[in-house]
Length: 60
Image (tube, rainbow, N blue to C red):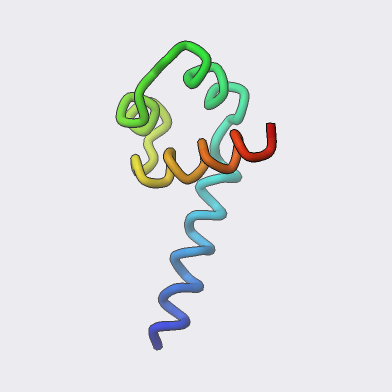
């Protein structure tokens, strides 16, 4: 059961990533918005913003 819950959470996070406009996300980073401000602007969890920023920075 724990595994299926983990898989469901990963699926939801993946769907959130698909719903985000990455141009907007990157622009907010460039403009110096905090993680909290970005999460409010994009209507996602602050922890998700932090993870996504790490992934973006790793790839750039």
